[in-house]
Length: 247
Ligand code: NDP
Image (cartoon, protein in one colour):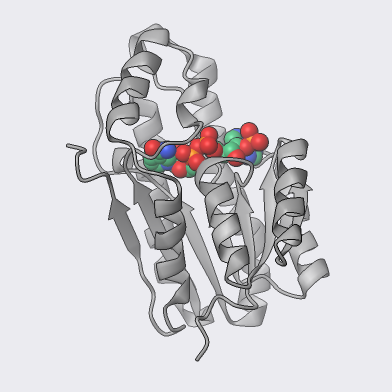
C-alpha cells in the first residue's frame, strides 16, 4: 500500500533551516523528490547533498520568494527535473516582531513581502501546472499568531491571518481541479526564526519563552507528512498545533 508520499515531487520554500529543512529531510526519507528553495545557497546545497548521500532525491534552487521570477524558476525547475509538481509548501517566513510605535516600517514591508506576497507568488507559479495536471496540494504556513494577536505581533499576525484567508479562498476555488489546500499554524517551535528580531527586548523575551516551551522542528515534519499522506480525496484543511505548555 502506498503512503501517498513516495514518488511525489515536493517544492519547499524556506528549506534552508528550521521547519522547511526538517520537512525536506523527512519527506525525502519517505521517497519524495524534494526541490529546495531559499536564499542561502550554501545551506541549500549542503542539505541537497545530505539528502542525496542518504539515498534520497533533492535539488537546490536559490530563491528569493519576494521575486515572482525566482518563484517561477523554482517551480519550473521542479517540473523540468522531475516531470511534475505534486506539493508546494509555502513555508518561507520572517518574524521581526516590534510594537507599532517603534515604526519599523522597513520590517513591516519585509513581513508583507515574504509572508504574504511570497505565498501569493508561490501560488501563481504552481497553480497553472496543478490545474493542467488536475491534481496538486498547496500547503501554506500560518501561525498561532494567525489566530490571535499580541503586543508586538500586529504586522506579523496580519500577514499570518492573511495567509489563512488566502488559503481558504484558494481551497474553494481550486476544488474543480482536484487540488488540495492545507493551512499549518505552528505554535512555538525551536528554529532560527527569532534570530532576526531586531528589537532586543522582544527578541530576549521570545528567546526565553521558546527556549522554555518550544518543541522541535521535526514536529512540523510529522504533521506535514500527515496532511500529504491522506488519500487524494481527503483534504486536511487546517492544522493548528503548539507545545502542550504554551498558553
Ligand atoms: P527559520 O528562520 O528557521 O526558517 C525560515 C526560512 O525562511 C529560512 O529557510 C529562510 O531562508 C526563509 N526565508 C526568509 N526570507 C526569505 C526570502 N525572502 N526568500 C526565500 N526564503 C526566505 O524559521 P521557521 O522554520 O520557524 O519558519 C518557517 C515558517 O514557520 C515561517 O513561515 C514562520 O513564520 C512559521 N512559523 C514559525 C513558528 C516558530 O515558532 N518557529 C511559529 C509559527 C509559524 P533564507 O534566509 O536562506 O532565505
